[in-house]
Length: 376
Image (cartoon, rainbow, N blue to C red; front, side, top):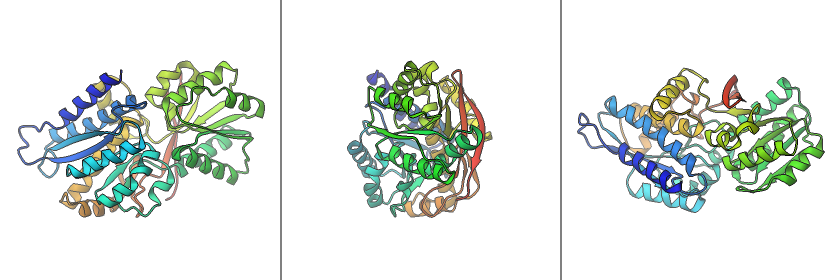
Protein backbone atom coordinates (compact mmCIF):
# COMPACT_ATOMS: atom_id res chain seq x y z
CA UNK A 1 0.00 0.00 0.00
CA UNK A 2 2.73 2.47 1.01
CA UNK A 3 4.74 1.65 -2.14
CA UNK A 4 1.71 2.41 -4.31
CA UNK A 5 1.10 5.65 -2.45
CA UNK A 6 4.74 6.66 -2.84
CA UNK A 7 4.54 5.99 -6.59
CA UNK A 8 1.40 8.15 -6.88
CA UNK A 9 2.97 11.08 -5.06
CA UNK A 10 6.15 10.72 -7.11
CA UNK A 11 3.99 10.88 -10.22
CA UNK A 12 2.29 14.00 -8.89
CA UNK A 13 5.69 15.58 -8.31
CA UNK A 14 6.85 14.76 -11.83
CA UNK A 15 3.62 15.90 -13.42
CA UNK A 16 3.78 19.18 -11.53
CA UNK A 17 7.26 19.73 -12.92
CA UNK A 18 6.22 19.56 -16.58
CA UNK A 19 5.91 23.02 -18.09
CA UNK A 20 3.43 23.65 -20.85
CA UNK A 21 4.94 24.56 -24.24
CA UNK A 22 3.43 28.04 -24.06
CA UNK A 23 5.40 28.73 -20.87
CA UNK A 24 8.99 28.90 -22.08
CA UNK A 25 10.35 31.08 -19.28
CA UNK A 26 12.35 29.64 -16.40
CA UNK A 27 10.01 27.95 -13.93
CA UNK A 28 9.51 28.98 -10.32
CA UNK A 29 9.62 26.05 -7.94
CA UNK A 30 7.24 25.54 -5.02
CA UNK A 31 8.22 23.07 -2.35
CA UNK A 32 5.84 20.69 -0.59
CA UNK A 33 6.63 18.87 2.65
CA UNK A 34 4.36 15.85 2.50
CA UNK A 35 3.76 12.47 4.12
CA UNK A 36 4.80 10.27 1.22
CA UNK A 37 5.52 7.36 3.57
CA UNK A 38 4.75 6.54 7.19
CA UNK A 39 1.45 5.97 9.03
CA UNK A 40 -0.21 9.06 7.52
CA UNK A 41 0.79 8.38 3.91
CA UNK A 42 -2.81 8.11 2.73
CA UNK A 43 -3.35 11.74 3.77
CA UNK A 44 -0.15 12.56 1.89
CA UNK A 45 -1.75 11.43 -1.37
CA UNK A 46 -4.64 13.85 -0.87
CA UNK A 47 -2.28 16.73 -0.05
CA UNK A 48 -0.26 16.08 -3.20
CA UNK A 49 -3.43 15.89 -5.30
CA UNK A 50 -4.75 19.22 -4.04
CA UNK A 51 -1.40 20.89 -4.65
CA UNK A 52 -1.05 19.48 -8.14
CA UNK A 53 -4.59 20.45 -9.12
CA UNK A 54 -3.88 24.10 -8.30
CA UNK A 55 -0.54 24.10 -10.10
CA UNK A 56 -2.02 22.46 -13.21
CA UNK A 57 -4.75 25.10 -13.31
CA UNK A 58 -2.28 27.94 -12.90
CA UNK A 59 0.04 26.62 -15.61
CA UNK A 60 -2.87 26.08 -17.99
CA UNK A 61 -3.82 29.73 -17.48
CA UNK A 62 -0.32 31.05 -18.23
CA UNK A 63 1.59 30.52 -15.01
CA UNK A 64 2.62 33.23 -12.55
CA UNK A 65 4.27 36.38 -13.92
CA UNK A 66 4.50 34.51 -17.23
CA UNK A 67 6.51 31.66 -15.68
CA UNK A 68 5.42 28.04 -15.21
CA UNK A 69 5.28 26.57 -11.72
CA UNK A 70 7.07 23.38 -10.80
CA UNK A 71 6.39 21.29 -7.73
CA UNK A 72 9.11 19.63 -5.69
CA UNK A 73 7.93 17.18 -3.02
CA UNK A 74 10.05 16.07 -0.08
CA UNK A 75 8.89 13.17 2.09
CA UNK A 76 8.77 13.76 5.83
CA UNK A 77 7.89 10.11 6.52
CA UNK A 78 5.21 11.32 8.97
CA UNK A 79 7.85 12.19 11.58
CA UNK A 80 9.20 15.39 13.15
CA UNK A 81 12.94 14.84 12.48
CA UNK A 82 12.32 13.99 8.83
CA UNK A 83 10.15 17.10 8.50
CA UNK A 84 13.17 19.20 9.44
CA UNK A 85 15.29 17.29 6.92
CA UNK A 86 12.65 17.76 4.21
CA UNK A 87 12.61 21.52 4.80
CA UNK A 88 16.39 21.64 4.66
CA UNK A 89 16.42 19.84 1.31
CA UNK A 90 13.82 22.18 -0.20
CA UNK A 91 15.62 25.27 1.04
CA UNK A 92 18.91 24.03 -0.41
CA UNK A 93 17.10 23.39 -3.70
CA UNK A 94 16.19 27.08 -3.92
CA UNK A 95 12.41 26.87 -3.83
CA UNK A 96 10.39 30.09 -3.82
CA UNK A 97 8.28 28.99 -0.85
CA UNK A 98 7.31 25.83 1.02
CA UNK A 99 3.79 24.45 1.56
CA UNK A 100 3.14 22.21 4.55
CA UNK A 101 3.18 20.30 6.65
CA UNK A 102 -0.33 19.89 8.05
CA UNK A 103 0.56 18.41 11.45
CA UNK A 104 1.14 20.95 14.22
CA UNK A 105 3.83 18.89 15.91
CA UNK A 106 5.76 18.71 12.62
CA UNK A 107 5.49 22.46 12.09
CA UNK A 108 6.71 23.04 15.63
CA UNK A 109 9.78 20.89 14.94
CA UNK A 110 10.55 22.72 11.69
CA UNK A 111 9.91 26.25 12.97
CA UNK A 112 13.57 27.08 13.81
CA UNK A 113 14.65 25.89 10.35
CA UNK A 114 11.90 27.97 8.73
CA UNK A 115 13.00 31.06 10.67
CA UNK A 116 16.64 30.56 9.71
CA UNK A 117 15.84 29.97 6.03
CA UNK A 118 13.89 33.23 5.60
CA UNK A 119 11.62 31.60 3.01
CA UNK A 120 7.80 31.81 3.28
CA UNK A 121 6.23 28.67 4.76
CA UNK A 122 2.49 28.17 4.28
CA UNK A 123 1.52 25.73 7.01
CA UNK A 124 -1.60 23.75 7.82
CA UNK A 125 -1.01 23.10 11.53
CA UNK A 126 -3.79 24.58 13.67
CA UNK A 127 -2.17 24.73 17.13
CA UNK A 128 -2.43 28.41 18.20
CA UNK A 129 1.16 28.57 19.47
CA UNK A 130 2.68 28.02 16.01
CA UNK A 131 2.19 31.68 15.04
CA UNK A 132 3.13 33.01 18.46
CA UNK A 133 6.84 32.24 18.48
CA UNK A 134 8.00 35.41 16.69
CA UNK A 135 8.68 33.59 13.41
CA UNK A 136 7.97 36.08 10.59
CA UNK A 137 8.13 33.42 7.87
CA UNK A 138 5.20 31.25 8.96
CA UNK A 139 1.81 31.84 7.33
CA UNK A 140 -1.12 29.73 8.49
CA UNK A 141 -3.62 29.13 5.69
CA UNK A 142 -6.24 27.50 7.96
CA UNK A 143 -7.95 28.87 11.09
CA UNK A 144 -6.31 28.01 14.40
CA UNK A 145 -7.82 26.03 17.25
CA UNK A 146 -8.74 29.05 19.35
CA UNK A 147 -11.53 29.42 16.81
CA UNK A 148 -12.34 25.72 16.48
CA UNK A 149 -12.69 25.36 20.25
CA UNK A 150 -15.03 28.35 20.46
CA UNK A 151 -17.20 26.94 17.69
CA UNK A 152 -17.26 23.47 19.30
CA UNK A 153 -18.21 24.90 22.69
CA UNK A 154 -20.83 27.33 21.37
CA UNK A 155 -22.55 24.77 19.17
CA UNK A 156 -22.44 22.00 21.74
CA UNK A 157 -23.69 24.12 24.64
CA UNK A 158 -26.04 26.57 22.93
CA UNK A 159 -27.41 24.51 20.03
CA UNK A 160 -27.21 20.93 21.31
CA UNK A 161 -27.91 22.02 24.93
CA UNK A 162 -25.18 19.76 26.39
CA UNK A 163 -23.59 20.67 29.72
CA UNK A 164 -21.79 17.45 30.72
CA UNK A 165 -18.68 17.22 28.55
CA UNK A 166 -15.97 14.58 28.24
CA UNK A 167 -12.83 15.83 26.46
CA UNK A 168 -10.59 13.30 24.68
CA UNK A 169 -7.35 14.53 23.13
CA UNK A 170 -4.07 13.46 21.62
CA UNK A 171 -1.17 14.43 23.88
CA UNK A 172 0.81 15.86 20.97
CA UNK A 173 1.10 19.60 20.24
CA UNK A 174 -2.16 19.77 18.29
CA UNK A 175 -4.26 17.79 20.73
CA UNK A 176 -2.91 19.37 23.89
CA UNK A 177 -3.39 22.87 22.52
CA UNK A 178 -6.91 22.03 21.37
CA UNK A 179 -7.82 20.51 24.74
CA UNK A 180 -6.69 23.62 26.61
CA UNK A 181 -8.53 25.92 24.21
CA UNK A 182 -11.73 23.87 24.48
CA UNK A 183 -11.61 23.86 28.28
CA UNK A 184 -11.17 27.65 28.23
CA UNK A 185 -14.06 28.09 25.78
CA UNK A 186 -16.35 25.90 27.89
CA UNK A 187 -15.39 27.78 31.05
CA UNK A 188 -16.60 31.02 29.47
CA UNK A 189 -19.96 29.30 28.99
CA UNK A 190 -20.03 28.09 32.59
CA UNK A 191 -19.23 24.45 31.83
CA UNK A 192 -16.68 22.30 33.70
CA UNK A 193 -15.91 18.99 31.90
CA UNK A 194 -16.77 15.79 33.78
CA UNK A 195 -13.78 14.04 32.18
CA UNK A 196 -10.55 15.18 30.49
CA UNK A 197 -8.46 12.32 29.14
CA UNK A 198 -5.43 12.22 26.84
CA UNK A 199 -3.94 9.40 24.77
CA UNK A 200 -0.81 8.87 22.69
CA UNK A 201 -1.00 8.85 18.89
CA UNK A 202 -1.30 5.49 17.13
CA UNK A 203 -3.01 3.87 20.12
CA UNK A 204 -4.61 0.51 19.42
CA UNK A 205 -6.91 0.23 22.44
CA UNK A 206 -9.21 3.01 23.65
CA UNK A 207 -11.26 0.73 25.88
CA UNK A 208 -10.11 2.31 29.19
CA UNK A 209 -11.04 5.79 27.93
CA UNK A 210 -14.39 4.61 26.59
CA UNK A 211 -15.23 3.00 29.94
CA UNK A 212 -14.33 6.26 31.72
CA UNK A 213 -16.64 8.17 29.40
CA UNK A 214 -19.40 5.66 30.04
CA UNK A 215 -19.11 5.97 33.83
CA UNK A 216 -18.67 9.77 33.82
CA UNK A 217 -22.25 10.54 32.80
CA UNK A 218 -21.04 12.66 29.88
CA UNK A 219 -23.74 13.88 27.49
CA UNK A 220 -21.28 14.87 24.76
CA UNK A 221 -17.68 14.16 23.77
CA UNK A 222 -15.47 16.97 22.54
CA UNK A 223 -12.24 15.72 21.01
CA UNK A 224 -9.01 16.77 19.35
CA UNK A 225 -7.66 13.68 17.60
CA UNK A 226 -4.67 14.11 15.30
CA UNK A 227 -4.56 10.93 13.22
CA UNK A 228 -7.37 9.39 11.19
CA UNK A 229 -6.54 5.78 12.20
CA UNK A 230 -6.99 6.75 15.86
CA UNK A 231 -10.39 8.23 15.03
CA UNK A 232 -11.41 4.99 13.33
CA UNK A 233 -10.37 2.77 16.25
CA UNK A 234 -11.88 5.08 18.89
CA UNK A 235 -15.20 5.38 17.03
CA UNK A 236 -15.57 1.63 16.62
CA UNK A 237 -14.71 0.86 20.26
CA UNK A 238 -16.97 3.67 21.46
CA UNK A 239 -20.01 2.24 19.71
CA UNK A 240 -19.09 -1.40 20.45
CA UNK A 241 -19.16 -0.60 24.16
CA UNK A 242 -22.56 1.03 23.87
CA UNK A 243 -21.64 4.72 24.15
CA UNK A 244 -24.12 6.63 21.96
CA UNK A 245 -23.61 10.16 23.30
CA UNK A 246 -23.26 13.10 20.95
CA UNK A 247 -19.75 13.71 19.73
CA UNK A 248 -18.24 16.88 18.27
CA UNK A 249 -14.68 16.64 17.05
CA UNK A 250 -11.93 18.59 15.36
CA UNK A 251 -11.53 18.29 11.60
CA UNK A 252 -9.95 14.82 11.57
CA UNK A 253 -13.32 13.10 12.10
CA UNK A 254 -14.64 14.17 8.68
CA UNK A 255 -11.54 13.40 6.65
CA UNK A 256 -11.96 10.84 3.90
CA UNK A 257 -9.58 8.41 5.63
CA UNK A 258 -11.32 8.56 9.03
CA UNK A 259 -14.77 8.13 7.52
CA UNK A 260 -13.60 5.15 5.47
CA UNK A 261 -11.98 3.48 8.48
CA UNK A 262 -14.87 4.11 10.90
CA UNK A 263 -17.81 3.55 8.57
CA UNK A 264 -21.22 3.63 10.25
CA UNK A 265 -19.69 4.25 13.69
CA UNK A 266 -19.14 7.88 12.68
CA UNK A 267 -22.66 8.44 11.39
CA UNK A 268 -24.33 11.31 13.24
CA UNK A 269 -21.06 12.72 14.58
CA UNK A 270 -20.54 16.50 14.45
CA UNK A 271 -17.33 18.23 13.52
CA UNK A 272 -15.90 21.67 13.16
CA UNK A 273 -14.28 21.92 9.76
CA UNK A 274 -12.22 24.69 8.23
CA UNK A 275 -13.07 23.22 4.82
CA UNK A 276 -16.30 21.68 3.64
CA UNK A 277 -17.38 21.31 -0.01
CA UNK A 278 -20.45 23.51 0.57
CA UNK A 279 -18.72 26.12 2.73
CA UNK A 280 -18.65 28.89 0.10
CA UNK A 281 -18.56 29.44 -3.66
CA UNK A 282 -14.80 28.90 -3.84
CA UNK A 283 -15.08 25.60 -1.96
CA UNK A 284 -17.88 24.44 -4.27
CA UNK A 285 -15.85 25.28 -7.39
CA UNK A 286 -12.76 23.50 -6.06
CA UNK A 287 -14.83 20.46 -5.09
CA UNK A 288 -16.30 20.15 -8.58
CA UNK A 289 -12.84 20.25 -10.15
CA UNK A 290 -11.38 17.84 -7.60
CA UNK A 291 -14.17 15.31 -8.13
CA UNK A 292 -13.78 15.57 -11.91
CA UNK A 293 -10.03 14.96 -11.75
CA UNK A 294 -9.76 12.38 -8.99
CA UNK A 295 -13.22 10.83 -8.75
CA UNK A 296 -13.66 11.34 -5.00
CA UNK A 297 -14.69 13.89 -2.42
CA UNK A 298 -12.16 16.52 -1.31
CA UNK A 299 -11.43 17.15 2.35
CA UNK A 300 -9.14 19.40 4.40
CA UNK A 301 -6.02 17.50 3.28
CA UNK A 302 -6.58 18.37 -0.38
CA UNK A 303 -8.15 21.78 0.22
CA UNK A 304 -5.49 23.38 2.41
CA UNK A 305 -2.60 23.05 -0.12
CA UNK A 306 -4.88 24.04 -2.99
CA UNK A 307 -5.65 27.27 -1.16
CA UNK A 308 -1.99 27.74 -0.25
CA UNK A 309 -0.87 27.57 -3.88
CA UNK A 310 -3.37 30.25 -4.89
CA UNK A 311 -2.36 32.43 -1.94
CA UNK A 312 1.24 32.22 -3.14
CA UNK A 313 0.14 33.12 -6.66
CA UNK A 314 -1.76 36.13 -5.36
CA UNK A 315 1.16 37.32 -3.22
CA UNK A 316 3.78 36.86 -5.96
CA UNK A 317 1.66 38.72 -8.50
CA UNK A 318 0.98 41.47 -6.00
CA UNK A 319 4.70 41.76 -5.22
CA UNK A 320 5.67 41.35 -8.90
CA UNK A 321 8.60 39.38 -7.55
CA UNK A 322 9.69 35.99 -6.24
CA UNK A 323 12.02 37.56 -3.70
CA UNK A 324 11.22 36.12 -0.29
CA UNK A 325 10.88 39.42 1.56
CA UNK A 326 8.63 40.85 -1.16
CA UNK A 327 6.39 37.77 -0.98
CA UNK A 328 6.27 38.02 2.83
CA UNK A 329 5.17 41.67 2.73
CA UNK A 330 2.59 40.97 0.01
CA UNK A 331 1.21 38.00 1.96
CA UNK A 332 0.74 40.07 5.12
CA UNK A 333 -1.09 42.73 3.12
CA UNK A 334 -3.77 40.30 1.91
CA UNK A 335 -7.21 41.34 3.17
CA UNK A 336 -10.66 40.16 2.13
CA UNK A 337 -9.41 37.52 -0.30
CA UNK A 338 -11.93 34.70 -0.64
CA UNK A 339 -10.65 31.14 -0.90
CA UNK A 340 -11.56 27.53 -0.21
CA UNK A 341 -10.87 27.91 3.53
CA UNK A 342 -12.85 31.14 3.91
CA UNK A 343 -11.84 34.78 3.72
CA UNK A 344 -8.13 35.47 4.19
CA UNK A 345 -7.32 38.50 6.34
CA UNK A 346 -3.71 38.20 7.41
CA UNK A 347 -2.61 39.38 10.83
CA UNK A 348 1.01 40.43 11.55
CA UNK A 349 1.69 37.05 13.18
CA UNK A 350 0.74 35.12 10.04
CA UNK A 351 -2.79 33.98 10.91
CA UNK A 352 -5.40 34.58 8.23
CA UNK A 353 -8.73 32.76 8.71
CA UNK A 354 -11.04 33.36 11.68
CA UNK A 355 -13.99 31.01 11.44
CA UNK A 356 -15.07 27.39 11.24
CA UNK A 357 -17.93 25.43 9.72
CA UNK A 358 -20.12 23.08 11.74
CA UNK A 359 -20.81 19.88 9.79
CA UNK A 360 -22.38 16.48 10.47
CA UNK A 361 -21.77 13.01 9.10
CA UNK A 362 -25.14 12.04 7.63
CA UNK A 363 -24.84 8.34 6.74
CA UNK A 364 -21.40 8.82 5.25
CA UNK A 365 -21.98 12.22 3.67
CA UNK A 366 -20.62 15.40 5.25
CA UNK A 367 -23.49 17.87 5.55
CA UNK A 368 -22.88 21.58 6.09
CA UNK A 369 -24.86 23.06 9.01
CA UNK A 370 -23.56 26.60 9.59
CA UNK A 371 -20.49 28.83 9.52
CA UNK A 372 -19.43 30.70 12.64
CA UNK A 373 -17.02 33.62 12.25
CA UNK A 374 -15.13 35.48 14.98
CA UNK A 375 -13.21 38.73 15.12
CA UNK A 376 -9.42 38.55 14.95
